[in-house]
Length: 211
Image 1 (cartoon, rainbow, N blue to C red):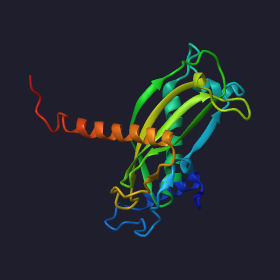
Image 2 (image 1 turned 90 degrees about the horizontal axis):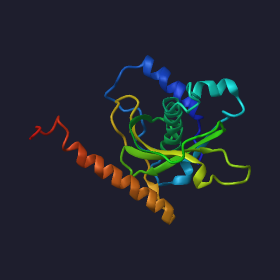
Image 3 (image 1 turned 90 degrees about the vertical axis):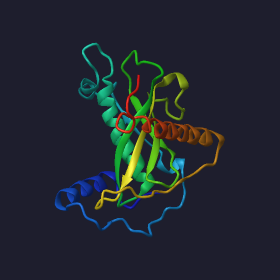
């Protein structure tokens, strides 16, 4: 399913509106917008970093030792998460990054190559939050899929959707689960959500430290 406005244009308009309007008590998101379930594939998106082809670009991603700067990579993953979230929520919704976790370095990069950044929404129940599973891998040969040994890193971004005017959480479409693999990914997100919920009960702001 395609949204009416490209993500970059929607983001630019959102930023302009945030500067020109103050927080309001009146929601700007339509109450009758489409919240029908969406497939994981609906939000799938990928981009390629041509590090091996563009030496000027690679300078921004490599440190003095020739290793990938993970901080720079995470900035790209955060932007990618915004695109994926936008494809899931549709227009007139502000989405912010709430957490990044389950960061796993699978196969450290030992030589310069083009990288493929990809991801999709893998957990959404219809409330305001969603989990986006992302991976960074070597760009596969044309017509081929990414091999397990070519996956550099995986991680999960938790995003929260807000009304642009009130800045309050709003509901988003839930996921429609169709395959066993999707059920596995959804379960991972559910477990992660429940673990965070339990952990929040024991924070120092809510519970006095003991010996």
